[in-house]
Image 1 (spheres, rainbow, N blue to C red):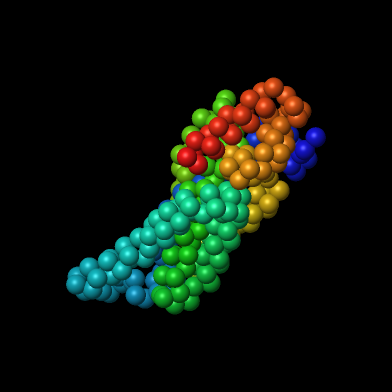
Image 2: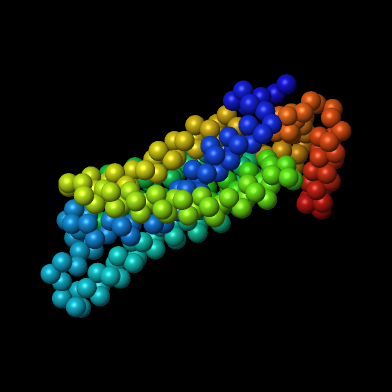
Length: 257
């Protein structure tokens, strides 16, 4: 019997949910809320005087506020392009590979943000971070829904909102806690948290199965059958599994027409 991480059935589904889906969407909520808490830190303003409003005239404050808003928005711009690009890439390369690629991009963006020393460095890192997070946001829920049985699918996919809110909450508490830290560690440590989240995703997705639906669309039916039996905790040849295979084959044919 095929196993992934030595697991089958409900345990395998839970690992997919909490090992990949959760950190992917927590990353989204965390990264969206992160910068708002560090923009006013003295160490952050010292590192990037372009966004400092200390001793600024009203006209300069208006310009600086625009710059601050731009830095925050660049993450969303990167996320938009990351999400759009993964619509086609997921069908071309498979959900697992795209999740891996997006995790690596987010990892690079988080490292660049944590090590940022100049304003241009910060801007580029925000774009890259958004690109990776957008890819995860667009692909991880699709991958999980295509792994999930009909009974679990609704609960698994609806967990996105919960995980995004959890990520935002974590960001706010981390920002608050680290605001008392001396020097640049007060903003560099919060910026480094997505590094850990990216590594968690990479550590699990490497050992977890590809989407059976995608495999069938690529005419890899035998692999899809093994994965479905592992996810449902059943044996190959089970009537329920064969029924699911037939449904997915029909769906793949319809999509190709």
